[in-house]
Amino acid sequence: MSSLRSSLSPDRLGSVIAVLIGVALFASPFVIYRANRIVAGVGRMLTDALPTPGAVGMMVVALAVALCAALVRAPLIRLAAASIGLCAIFPAVGYSAGFVTPPGNTFARVSPALGFWLLALAFALLAADALTRMRLGPWARLAALAVAAGATALLLVSGAWDNLSLLKEYASRADTFWREAREHLWLAFGSMIAACLLGLPLGILGHRVPRLRNAILQVLNIVQTIPSIALFGILIAPLGYLAAHVSLAAALGIRGIGAAPAFIALFLYSLLPVVANTVTGLKQVPAAVTDAARGMGLSARQRLWQVELPLALPVILAGIRIVLVQNLGLATVAALIGGGGFGTFVFQGIGQTAIDLVLLGAIPTVALSFAAAIILDALIDLTRRGSP
Image (cartoon, rainbow, N blue to C red; front, side, top):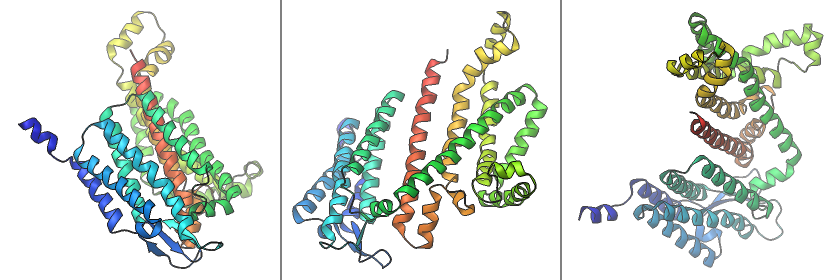
């Protein structure tokens, strides 16, 4: 009796997802239509944004996914339902852009509206919940990420979204987009690598000398408390002075504004997670293991490279994961001081009240952070499994 009651009781998260789907279908516009790029838009409900058969089909699919989310607990069925919903909604919004736009009108803009985003959020939540319940291993998570990336690439290459305002913004800025993408990746990954090159030796030194460890961590903690905008501003004056009085610095491209202060600020923010996790990882190495290595005749350097660092690697990688996700997000702010990156589109879009331009910078940033977190999480799991 209790098992029957349990099987019929609604799933709590699934009930929230079902409510989101209901709000998206019956109380929120699916797309926003603008006569041109700068005028206010008009929301179109799903029934007005697609031909009648398409709208009915989309509603049937969404309601079926809502029922599945609320009542079915089997992870595989929930994942299949979420996948069907995502495969239906993304092409649908692209088709809607062509359906709503008058023939021959090249000025009109069509953007996804609240209803689309709520449906996408609900289906993505259901998929994430199903994957969590399936307790996938690291290789399976990487495979799921590859499938999602491949599906996104296929959607973009197929031209299904070409009529959406977001892709029109991209089409007019394709060269600039990829230049800013390279700048964003350079800022995020370059500062992370520089922080690892300095932070790992500092962490090892801090583990060996406790008094020095406290001083290092306190200084880095103070740096971490400075807001990013303030730190960018603080660096402008000294770097500007350096560029004006040291010809080599100017030749290397160091300026008061631009990529140099952004890179240095991200580097400084990255040091604390790298140093702190290196110290913590080395402290967690069992004393019996190091004693055994010492008893085998290993020197201090051999114990560090062959025993301590391999055992501390999962914790160190966890710190690098924090740094990379943090830097991918913070690099967006670098555009405020001329540092470039995806933040250029975000702040241009805010200044022009063009939400699609904001999304052109925000969506790649979120996607990169999401992918980096999954890849490094999988790498951490793999190193833990490889540890003795």
